[in-house]
Amino acid sequence: MKIKKGILTSFSITILISLGGYAYIALAHGQPHSEQDLKLFEMAYQKAVDQGYKLFHDSKLGTTGQSCDMCHPDAANTHPETYPKYQTQIKKVITLGEMINWCIINPLKGEALPLDSEKMIALEAYITNQRKGVPLAPGKH
Amino acid sequence: MKPRHESGITRRDLLRAGAGTAAVTLMAGASPFGMVRMAFGSEKAQSFTFAYLSDAHLYVKSLNQKFVDSLVKGVQNVNDMDPPPDFVFFGGDLAQLGHPDELKLGKEILSGLKPKLHMMVGEHDWYLDMGEAWKGLFGPDRYSFDHKGIHFVVLNSVIVKDYWTPNNMTPEQRMLAMAQLDNPKGEAFSVGSEQRAWLEKDLKKVKPETPLVVFSHSPLYKLYRPWNFWTDDAEEVQKILSRFKIVTVFHGHTHQILTNRIGNITFHGFLSTAWPWPYAPTGMPKLSLQMDRPDPFFSTDGCGWGTIDMLGSGQADKTYQLWNRSPMKVTYQEIAAGTWPPAYAQGSSGPSY
Image (cartoon, rainbow over all chains, first blue to last red; front, side, top):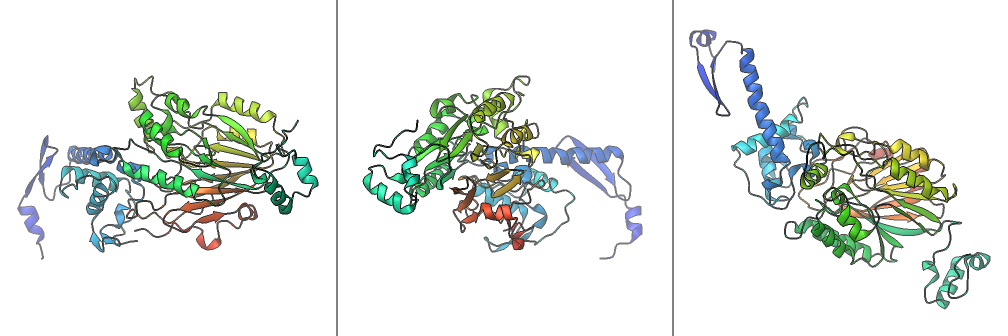
């Protein structure tokens, strides 16, 4: 679909973004983000990463006493950059979140998290953040 | 004065008789003990095999049955060895959170071992009560013994600087912090000056040509600090060992296939019965052939135990007894000749799943 340049400038599209329930920022398309905006984005992102770190190191995700970091210190060998990929054992293409749930259900003997839950997004944020700068390689084995 | 065997035959008599297989067989028939079992002084090393179990990380049984089953399996595997090993060494981290119930459970399972057992402590056994329960169950955390011409030393290499008192941490908080491998605030493991002095004193009586085996939980070198694959005073310990011609260090903690050599010392890391660790992102020794990434869908893949063949030279061959893969043997000859790891396997960490 072709979008005319004029549309973006003539219509000031305002988006409301919720940042952890404490901040609402009105953003105008075509305008550069203010430094304050960027700080708030970073804060919201870091909040998710920090929550993910805590969950990743917390045995409460499961029932066996184990936590994610016991097999994946610093999220090693989680290779988030390779998802979605064909997971050989499941025999279909899955996302990182689905693989996280496999670990929660099986070794940790816990309950799967809804893929759009705050906890799952936090876990994905921490795991992916640990591989910042690594080139995307979806489908890689 | 050498203790005389009940049959009235001393080692010297045996050596005079040729000390060959024929003599051993002949004498074994005449002795209720069997000559193979006889321990002599420390003049010349004899070949023998021992087993290595490590890093069971037991929780209380009601919480985690899997790790219990794995250690039980390891004990069964050792008991199935034919011929049996001279002894079994446990490489530390019997418990996960240092709880007396975890340690007692571990002792109960290990009591099923038919061969004699030597124990070593790991950080997971230690930091709830600073070793009180462990020492109560298993004895001193550092000691030495002699077996068939080899001097064995067992160290407590998981000593860290006290960071809990200034931070008002409870014993449980301290234990949880120490149990987290990737704890960014963790202090480095060490043997410590007091224990190094003990080591020097212990080795004073040992001749430099006597083969030496040292057991430590952490590797006695510096591999990767963020995960404490590391001993902070490694160089000082290595210096103490440098007077000996043949030195082998066996360690736990890293839960993986791992080999290194520094000067006169060969280092061997062993598997965990509970789970495999990933390889460190940096600092891997050139001698380490990395095993393929464990398959998470096979709950004991990358886990197992080990056997060590002490050669008559006092050097050691090791075999990783992997539960889901073929055993992997690494010989001292390959390490010394520089043919380990084989060229085809270098630089590969195997496929992912």
